[in-house]
Image (cartoon, rainbow, N blue to C red):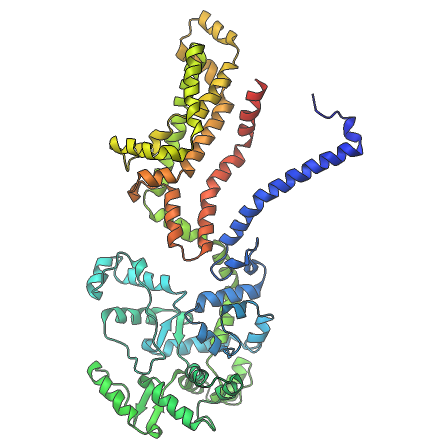
Length: 576
């Protein structure tokens, strides 16, 4: 019989009360869903945009946000200054937050690049591949995996062979990081070590979009930026043409060449850096003593202009091919911004999909690389559910069918285990497992949860509600207790047994502290213990959110698809 009759539901007071009840239930459901949705949204971010705390990350709905995120991944904090100088925004961009909050980012930074044809990008890539590998570098933030995969292929996956050649002691290829290019250092020369020669081989094999090139404009701008505090004066100086000595800045230019300009890019009377490493230091000292008028600069900027002049011959031909209006080859700057814009336009969809799944790929790669994490957890769940559906029903059946006076005393003993938190029993439980010699075994994970006082109590109450006439009829037919349990009790108890199975699954899958305490051997760690380990190794909080989401998915799916079973387990005992 319903609490409110159909007639009573027509009154406005009753309708208002029912509406408020539904509103309260809806608010309660949202308060549970919103934190999970926020964690899910955070798991789709990276360290760049994690602090936005948006349900749907901005890069999924906005191209400018996606471009900024891509630039962060490409340049990172390590190359942020290079980005600012290359974009001529060094006086405005102090850190990545300045880029994040900038409006009309595409129009302000790529207005000219939007008009240039693809031939300009092709020429830029051809030029980068024409440079010696020693004058290039990898964009450190994005090319770690490329470098590791190159070395893995070069040494046929044998890390011991690499260690012998390099004189190092890496445990795996994933520990190796690309060398940070010292392209702006005045006395930097490519060393002849085996590890650096392998690095140069990786550069030579890399696609041009991965290569980093040192710009004279950037070196000169860095020098002026450090020497002069006034942004206005610095801006006026930094836009000079580098094919000639900047007008009015001869002393600064001379000092820059003497103290900053990379000497490996200088030739004197047609003689450049010696091939023999032993002679390089002496040669550099002699160059510094030579008058600047005898220096011939071979920086990438002038090489780029010479490359274009050699290809097109006349600036009008270049303007026709590029769709541009440069007055001379000397006015063409290196195409860093064009490269970034072209890369974004071509690979926009790929980057968006990549960011969407990147953290989950990292988590799953981590878990699958830990050989037994999934298998140990799966075996533990199967054994826990199987034991919960065997031991607890048998104990409850014995109490239900046995002498009531003894059954009640035993039941009170079982219920007493519920009076103490699980943490209280961890120390004596650990000592018992240790004395039994079961540490770091499946028995240590399984034995403490074989019997559960609450499950036995719940099952006994359900078994007591089964009509006694069924058992009396079975006695007349000569059925044994085992037959009565299997043919009467067990089939009628499927809903409540399903609830017990779900509880066993949740305890086995979600158990962390006991598994971490009794199994110090990583070979016996469950998924939850490995996720805890992953949290300490994650590069940003978004990866941690992804790990927690992955951990929550199995439990969520089980409860979504088993709602009817759970409700039957709740309703049927009440009806009985």
